[in-house]
Image 1 (spheres, rainbow, N blue to C red):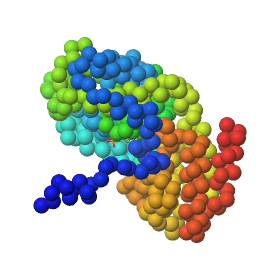
Image 2 (cartoon, helix red, strand yellow):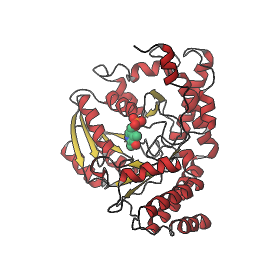
Image 3 (cartoon, helix red, strand yellow):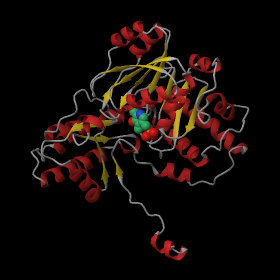
Image 4 (cartoon, rainbow, N blue to C red):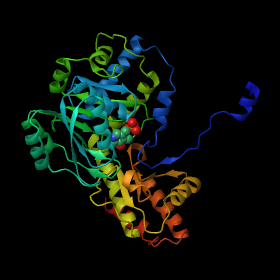
Length: 398
Ligand SMILES: *Cc1c(COP(=O)(O)O)cnc(C)c1O
């Protein structure tokens, strides 16, 4: 058995490298957020912490563009936000329509089935999006549907699913709109109230540029009413909003110990978003995406068809280029992380995120230069000289 001296020698003080995080999340975290996290831990019922919770909720409402009272940060990552939205709205036997065009719609189906929902899935090929009329047809076929769930920004394919038209057909059928906004909140335009979203979740480590660990959620008054009128207990004790909201609300009823320092981090990340302004932040993501796209396409790389997110760029890996070799060299030689493909895109796609703090002109130039260098050195059939001028052209015009 190893003595503590031996372990101490082998396991040194933590010293992770500074990476440039341009994958599908986590994204780069600013020093301001890291400093906020390092502030003294106080009690989860300390009056000072209760003020911090309230401020965090106010900031979340501003960033979600909502007046929803039931808006808070679930303890857990984006997937916990997904479970929180689904398990609070769904009771065993309820019908739910889930739209699947990538990994995360598939995950939502799994979550809904575990909550006892009778799930009607709608599928289109990965990368494509859903027509509101198709969803209306599905609702006509299943008139008892309680909620329709879909992904606004499908991180596995780059597909952007517009919200307002779908909200209309779902509300016309008397159902609730449940949206995954993990890769859109604070990076792309997202208007919870104006667009009629009833339940929405996100994660801290994508466009909010905060470490992973919290899941912002918001429920409309209609969704809150459904939760109030449940006949059965919420299937998950931990994510039960009827209890969690008593802790975040005036009652301060103890439910579980909130991750105090993560709340500090989220509060600071949200302050940064509000300081920049949502419109300017969305415009920054759009400009940097356009420049990266111009550079990649000038090299001869192709986007996954219909990939149009400004927060995540999903591109096809050129023929005869080995995925792992290129991503490994980007990380080792340049400290840059980009993402590989998932599911049917495994080994076939790269996913380059430009999220939050990481969406900068500097990172666009950096990743284009690094990719040109690596692809050029392995003899890939790409035009390595074309990328930078194309991107600079966009910045010059922007
Ligand atoms: C990342 C992601 C999730 C899951 O979030 P985790 O923080 O990894 O649990 C869900 N939906 C989408 C669209 C995502 O990009």
